[in-house]
Image (cartoon, rainbow, N blue to C red; front, side):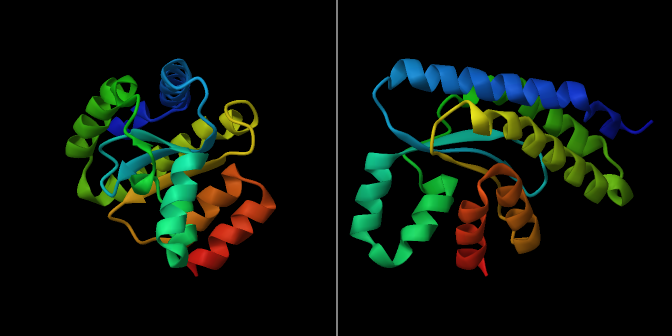
Length: 171
């Protein structure tokens, strides 16, 4: 079995636990914040996982400053108010992913990458019904331009209306 065998349901549960810990930490640190977005993102090599939170007041402020970029600020976790907040809960997972990425043969890497991302989206899915009311949920990959993948992830994690909004903006 290749090292990608470590990317399984146990990995998915660990991602979900890390998300829940980051969410709880955020709620304790910012009890009155109106969270309008939660994201988990990785890099193009599937070596890291990082959470990001966005608040409604931050989103309104940056959208008012640049009205032509409203969708960009809504859907881009790197522009959110609390990028990497709670990231320490993902350190062990990122170390695992880093080691796995180095050990995967080149011919297996795309399959490994897809598997990592699939499990991350699956870990986020249950949170969409219990973490933050009316928030959007994003799985994103920095330094990647796979529009079909991004649309599929957003569609799995959000309402049909939100998914259509994202698709319309991205295409």
